[in-house]
Length: 67
Image (cartoon, rainbow, N blue to C red; front, side):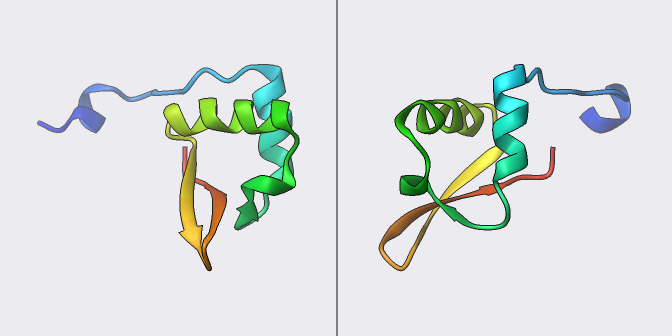
């Protein structure tokens, strides 16, 4: 039996600040585009596996995961 079959409703807790920042991320976005506070929130979202950090053209980019 798979874990998805056991857990029907799985949600990741997000703060209001994290939710509003997620709305601003469209496709690939450079991490340097965001202010320092927003970068801290994005790093928290990376730890929660909501956002992924990727290297593209020697630049750190972020993109949404399916959550």
